[in-house]
Length: 413
Image 1 (cartoon, rainbow, N blue to C red):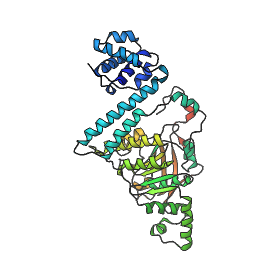
Image 2: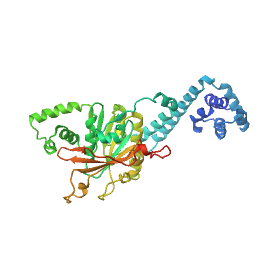
Image 3: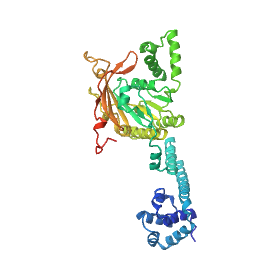
Image 4: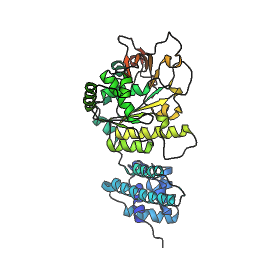
């Protein structure tokens, strides 16, 4: 006599009895959740035609499976409890799966923390309760979309107020263009809420030096040497009181540790300088795969925490022309996962001997914006005070004015 699992039988019975909600129940389940062979057979038969009546499904089964599902129908939970019962069954099946996976890893010669975390994340994703998206959409219809200002009025206008919460913005530029300085300048408008700056290349001291130079109008050379008067030092202490919500971290390099910090501390804005320096506890055959993985981890973290990530990136081309988003180094994942892509171009960086080119001249290109316009803007770089300024009274060169986009136009989402 077979010792079948009555819990499995009851779930199969529920799938047969409640045809009107069968697709919703079926979507939560996997064939691998079942260990009884008759349950697997019945589940596979149901998957071939979700709309079939129970008699049609039962008639296609083997004799043993027919007996199995008939008993399953008798064991089925009542309709009012069927969804919660299926959720409990999925949780039990997921726990068994997780136990089997971790036991298999125990015999592996090497196991990384990243692999263990990934297994747990997969398990958590299966058992989390999924709400009715359309219902939530209506509930939140008039809720204001939260944005993070860049501190640059014309750029904010192009972004419809700033970076939307839970998004990834990539700032790309050649070395020495000033992408770190640009990101630090954005922090000026973020003093009222929690933010974090992951500095993977520079020390925390160097980051604060740039903040002090910019905000207090003290020449960067003096600040860098910490050659300040007593009066200036008092001003520095008062300034840093305004930045008490900012945390600068210069000793975290793993993407797993970076995202863990964000999950734990829930900052509204997180700057990463820069993405090509980030490491991971997993092994990849090339840098492109590594960056793709890092990009996916950031995307998931941004969505789940509503943190706005500002990710700095090198670009690949050594030419003198303005870069495009395809020039982001190891760009596949970055180009795809970023909601915004901002590219900085200072012609002087690659033409230092050309006296006609000003070191201050800067072009900012918003090359990707999932939520509206793209465009080109003129900025001025002030190296003495480590600051970018928008050029006043300029007419923005909007590539695709939102008013010109018809309902039939395919926005670049």
